[in-house]
Image (cartoon, rainbow, N blue to C red; front, side):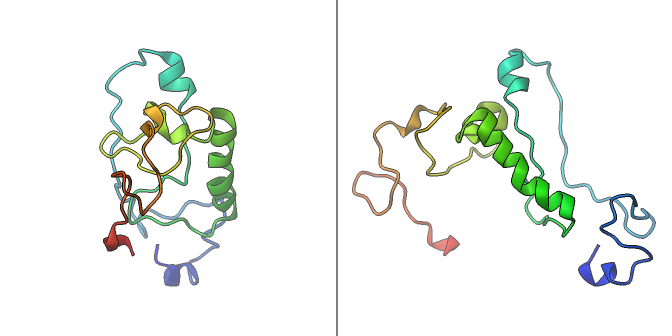
Length: 136
């Protein structure tokens, strides 16, 4: 729903007890989850999974819903506490198509080899990360 439509809708669009009419605003498909196997290792595939409403599909933004705003902060915070600061490196939480590439290193639950002794700062002369000018 565009923000300008929310101001004049027939009820408060952020009221969690209401559902927007699908005639007014049809559901939009944003992706597909394929469950194609049972967990081989329950701990690795289920117990360590970290779901969060802050993991958005590109082009989707959060609303001003106060409950959602609280969850955007608290879910990742709870996952960091439960699984460690590197919880996004755990294979079940790492996107299959594009691995998470951050400069987060060391600390609890480092599972990706910790980049060995490579530097994680820029500029460097050791072939470490380089600034990508397209994201300036």
